[in-house]
Image (cartoon, rainbow, N blue to C red; front, side):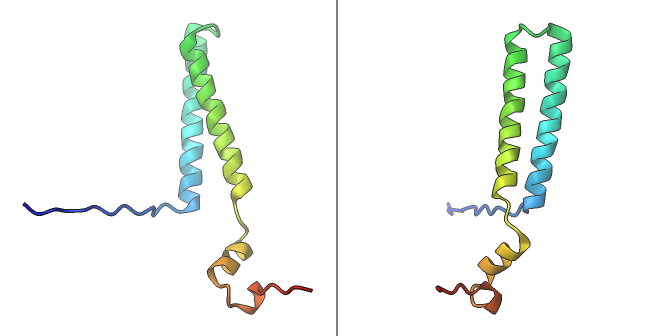
Length: 89
């Protein structure tokens, strides 16, 4: 028997992750709205669905807050570039 190992790399770009999160949020919103319409607002499943929506919204806000500018990404990728140099004054 031969041992095999799998290497998983995160090949998703930030745009892909953003689109994925937005799609998940849209689906969760639709699900929560449908459950609310069918079962009313006092059902446990409805509360769980809306909690999932809130968690996805928090994740989306955190993702936006941690996004770096293109210049910051360039400086991280090219620390030797003149534009990326930091001088103590």
